[in-house]
Image 1 (cartoon, rainbow, N blue to C red):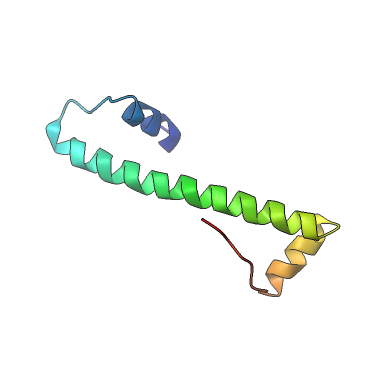
Image 2 (image 1 turned 60 degrees about the horizontal axis):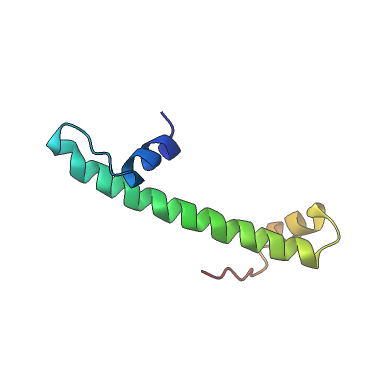
Amino acid sequence: MLSETFYESYVNGEEPEDDAWVMDWADWAGAYKVLLRRKEQYRRAIQALREQSKTLGGVIERTARHEPISVTP
C-alpha cells in the first residue's frame, strides 16, 4: 500500500481499529506531510532553475558543481 493511500484515509478521518496504531498513523502522517512539502519545494526550485537555464542538462550541470541553490518554503 502506498503512503498516499494511507494519507488519504488519514485526512478523511479514518483511524485504525487497533488503538495502539493511532499514534503510529499520526506520526507517519506528520512525516508524510514533511515529504510532500519537500517535494513541492524541490519542484519549485527545479522550475526556477529551468527558467534560468536553456536546457535540463544545464540544470544538472549546476547541481553537479554543487552550486548553491535557493529553496524557499
